[in-house]
Length: 283
Image (cartoon, rainbow, N blue to C red; front, side):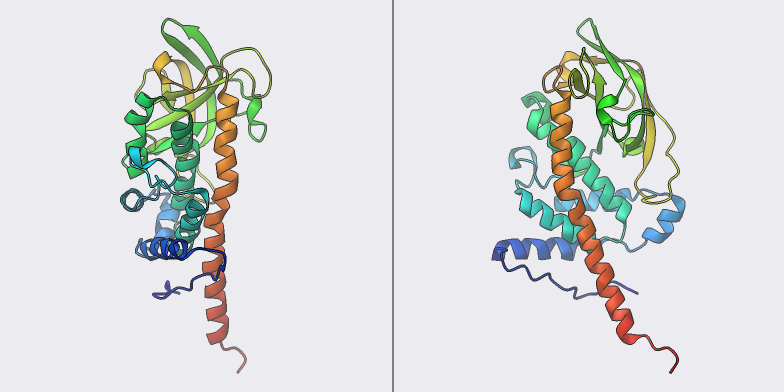
């Protein structure tokens, strides 16, 4: 079935008129994105053209300050936009990559970045010309993210990082990586620090894209840290406070990422109902 040219609008009485119109505008945009996810999913192709289109519309920078190219949209508005994107965009992998980018790169930079870090990275992250990711998960630290073993050792003018990360969403296409490593003593979230680095930096290797059963248009890979040097100016936030940064990212993610799935479910339900009404069987 094809996407409806006149999709339904959810009736939410407590929304303000401007919020309803904003939601509708995002939905109209999302319905213009190519409906070719089935072919690209089979070939595991990330849709950079649609990513760029989302950036031009302003999706990736929704919650970021306008001073840095963001939309200055509040949490409710961001959720509404993502629900509409999930409804109109049939590429669930693209929507997932957009979410990962926002919660693991845009939010940490706008919340904890120095003025220089914000000037350097936020405009590109907001307009989609740059793609971000963070590296937390390790072979022995998945759901228990704070059990990570990657280590950051103090060096001359910066830090030297060692470790292996896995299942890192957006890594194969990333321009910025927020790398978490243990920089001091402590267990759990204590003693972690977040570092900013980019592909091509000596000591940073991004593996081949991992094969998956779902969300195959959202690229994922291992990341290897082998004496990766990160200067002091690229430490994100305070040394030893990486756990706080990670928690902030996850708070936004847990609140917002399911909004896209609500939109997808709304679209699926509409298609099921439409099909059930026109289907004939056994006379």
